[in-house]
Image 1 (cartoon, rainbow, N blue to C red):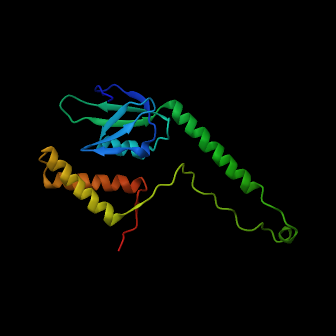
Image 2 (cartoon, rainbow, N blue to C red; image 1 turned 180 degrees about the vertical axis):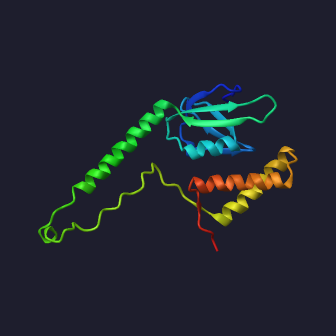
Length: 182
């Protein structure tokens, strides 16, 4: 299990971030070198929003100021950012080549148009399955309530609602939520 010292970044890479498992208030990931990374849910949400690919180097830091709660910072390393930028540039270049090499048929030469411009698909590395909003809402409320009760934490009702909202907003921003299911 990887231990975090306050204010000291850890550089690591994950085997596959989509194969995480939930254990209590923590989300467990396997690193490329076989160790286990246990992150509290707020840090796991930040990691999932970053969406690191298998083997992609990331930096995780647990910032702490005196008696304040810890704040987690999850980011790609400069080397991983460079590799990701080069891949995205290559994908864009390939897409532009296919757009610029539109066929010039004899029928379209005199019309001033070569037909509709081909649409370029969004550059996403992987498509994730979405969960309907109402299903996600019920699961998040149930999980948060159960996890806090089992851990003995006594959060106010407002704090519980805030946590549920935060999880749902992060899931929506990450593209994990679909339309409301009737």
